[in-house]
Image (cartoon, rainbow, N blue to C red; front, side, top):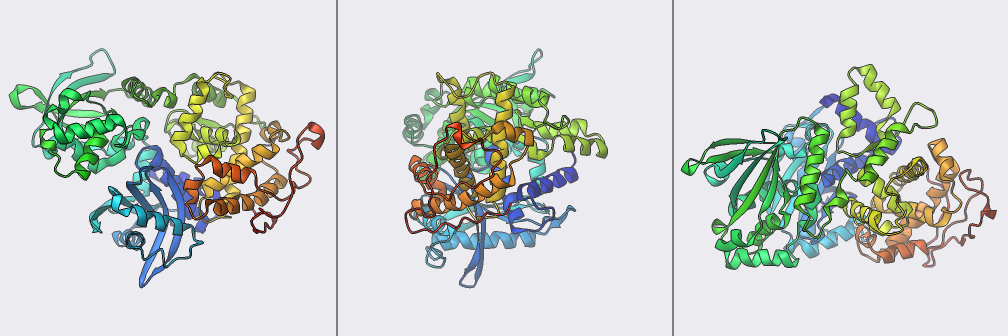
Length: 619
């Protein structure tokens, strides 16, 4: 797939999400923002993102924000601002335009840090709670980044750091070219290129074992602590394989031990620490000191074991500047991948990560694409056709496999168009998508709101428990009803996006959980599978209840950030116990009332003075 094809596919995805045939609507910019932020979260470039559009003025400065991502420890903050053109032709954007966007987001950050924005914006605004939160945690932030997201080609992908209130702020651009390299090529780690001569002054001496009878080469080396800190500072969470992102904390017992050793006994660090495991796409060797082979540079570097060590080295030096990392050495095992098969390489990465982390608290098997459940879902997706007999859904068990399919079989414009007609991107489901659809329908919206990775782990954990609601070997009936739940979730997304400015993901998730809670016994999932859509009457019902869900989320949050409140079980209790407008008549997906479903409570108020207007939201 070429850049222009990827660009047009992205625009089609945006418009499919907003149900708009033409470009340029504010909702399309939000959809584009959501697509890019979620991708960055999935590959470890950022944390769980939240759409939060805001535009205004602070004194004489224009301020603007599209979304944000804040680490669980509230020590790392990413702010996003979008420049979405929505055109059908690929265009370039000047550094002046991207810097103007940077300045607008920069002014938002400064206003929050200095406490000026809190008093300048409406407390009812969704950005108000974020401004309050940033003001409170600003002094404890260790990393701040501003990202410009654009569907155009930017000349520069990053700009010089800026300083504000004693904090260094990194400025980056995620344009369509950079997004293409990540998504179309399926290797975001390609951007991670480390030249150890630049970092340490020389190649790293190593023991090198060529893999003459395997699909990888092998090396053992020792990395200076200052070098590991430098690389993590430059690449951040991208350096860590997605399966070990949860190690970005220095609060656990093991991490405290690492911190104490770094500060008080740095020369013994290598003796006390198990080291790290690195995967690389390629390395270049030269003769090092003492005549040993030396690693000059490494491409596609990714740490699959040792996330605690890596993050602890960086944050310990950050918080305790007197820490002498020059006396620290970290043992490293390096596996250099040599397979040309993308899926085989993905399986290798998964297996190495799983086994390398077998002694860690996080169960890496839970995130493996090779578990029988995922393998069987993929088989069912490839062999189960929609009722029209020609089209089907696509389950992306391995990252990037949908684009690989388009590139492999779409060898001509006509063939590519034919594939997209039979398997449109709107029918692509990733592993984290699947977990979100199933968990929301299983009435666990608070779990879904924890973020895609944590929700995925929780769902996979559920596969192993006795009396699990999810089968290890799903059958065709399970698959079809799973797709029906996906259709319901996607329909809810389309309704919610244009209806609410912020926290759309939370409203969507809670709306789907509410539908399951109130209609589960009566809703005919098989009917939805056969229709491959929800009816206009069900959409109308969803639209009415979405308004109430949104109001309850904001009211019950009581000044807290809705995205944080939505993670609490108490939030689901508040939404579940709310009073909603009557169930409308004539919903074809519903079985008759005499099927045993309990009657629904009916009212037009939440019980707090909020009046609910039961007008439908247009899709």
